[in-house]
Image (cartoon, rainbow, N blue to C red; front, side, top):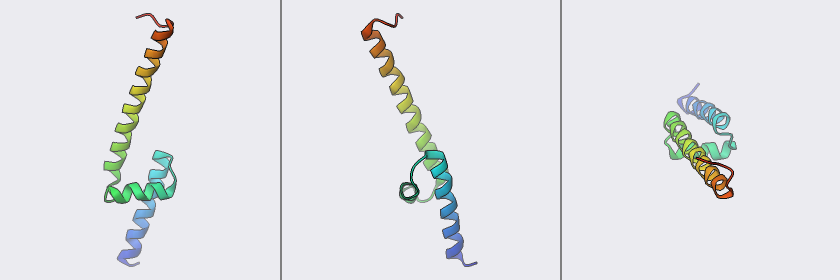
Length: 74
């Protein structure tokens, strides 16, 4: 197996892993991995960070909406 074929196989494995982790399409995973210079762990860590920030923002927004309705008493 040539080096190019091994690189292709390695990239395809990373694409498949990222699709499973991120739940995105393979083409989007390839774009993101390429932009991250195929550093899967760096990209995965970034994704987890973004998801945590998004979840935290959603929780804060939900609490504010409940406070506005008078349903939540702190």
